[in-house]
Amino acid sequence: MILRSLRFLALISAKAIARQAVAFPLVACLILSACGGGSGSTTATNATPATSAQPSAPLDAVAIGKLIFRDTSLSASGRLSCASCHNPDNAHAPSNDLAAQSGGPDLTIQGGRAAPSLRYLNLTPRFAIAADGTPSGGFNRDGRAQMLAEQAQRPLLAPHEMANASPAAVVARLQAAPYAEQFRALYGAAIFDDPAAAFERVLLALQQYQKNDSAFFPFDSKYDRFIAGQATLSDAELRGLALFNNSTKGNCAACHPSAKAADGSRPLFTDFSFDNLGVPRNPLLLANRDPAYYDLGLCGPDRSDLAQRTDLCGAFKVPTLRNVATRKVFFHNGRFTSLRDAVSFYVRRDTNPEEWYPVAADGTVLKFDDLPAQFRRNVNVAEVPYNRSPGQAPALSNAEIDDVVQFLGTLTDGYRAP
Ligand code: HEC
Ligand code: HEC
Image 1: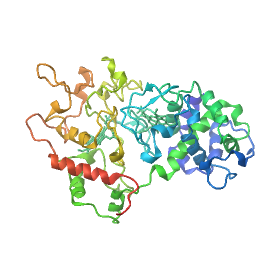
Image 2: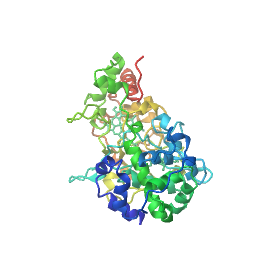
Image 3: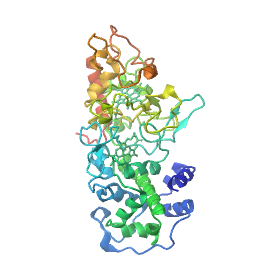
Image 4: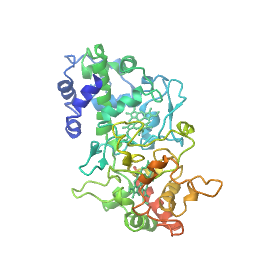
């Protein structure tokens, strides 16, 4: 039921829904044809501190979504909310340096991937495969969720995250939350009588919040000021920007575009494509203790529809580089804990593979060790900066790597002129 209506929902353009922030309950009713009538009564006593000075004012979906996002009582542990792994004070990414976050009833079950930042996702296109077979878009590192509402189901229910036994369990917890009355006021007095419908409102409120609250896309980094002509970059930052863009040096902008689009929209530092970088295996992920386990991104294990496209095994979504300097771990498996190492890996992966991969007793470097042998040929070895071999000079010198890292620091939101 939930999946079916979500698939139906997905037919409506995400943009159209975003524009309906105010008329949202109506849209939801039309789509889901399951709204209890009436507006219900709003009681001031149920106001929470997060809901502004006017506690009795009816909340819209964005405001309800914001409360849900921070509500640890919606988890089996009572200690985990969306904000625990996507900290609003750290660019909606974890503030710790764990390769993967843990959840479950006792917070002891480790997830399989590094938790990403949720900034600048509002313009993510739907997952699609072009006529030439190239995939792009979608949510999660493997693009498997089409809409934010669909995505939000998993953390609420996954045993390694908020670990609710069912949608009804989430709704039962929400019914006991301080903002339950506001939820009823927005979605109808009888909304809790239909747990499936109530759960869909939870997912849609989370989507509305992430798509419409500008805290997720402030566009106020130093680089934004710079391209608006309101700030200057240091010499090192300018050199880093030039290397980032230069197709024979960093070539980073080929996948992480840095320039305004033709329509004037600001750069997101992702082209929403997927690529296979051959990131080394991370022994800190417990799943990797099983030598037969591989996270192959687009071709599984978290999605199964592309398992036949073996050429895509090992490809992950290009993430935005906005706020990358605030990240504590990098890449889908959290293998690197410093931004400098992450950038260094790009340019020294092929010239100095022994710096990144295990070396066998006979001196052989076990390159691309996080992929089964038959998929190692999928790794991108054609494009700058990964088109080198041992003995050649890396595409960037150590000083140039430093400059690129300096430049990446200008992509952090919340810049204040010194
Ligand atoms: C225990 C940590 C944890 C919790 C709690 C959690 N997430 Fe996540 N989130 C992750 C991880 C890990 C991923 C990456 C999953 C993947 O790629 O398969 C992710 C991915 C996402 C994405 C996709 C991002 C992208 O780049 O496409 C969104 C959106 C998201 N989470 C929203 C939420 C919401 C909303 C909640 C609360 C209902 C939530 N998360 C709770 C860890 C968490
Ligand atoms: C051919 C496409 C491509 C090019 C060129 C490219 N990247 Fe990436 N980048 C990716 C993909 C794909 C990922 C995610 C890989 C993963 O998670 O396994 C990524 C991830 C990253 C990350 C980790 C971000 C995070 O939040 O974990 C950093 C940092 C990064 N890229 C910087 C750069 C820099 C600097 C350059 C230029 C030297 C560059 N990239 C060039 C495709 C590319």
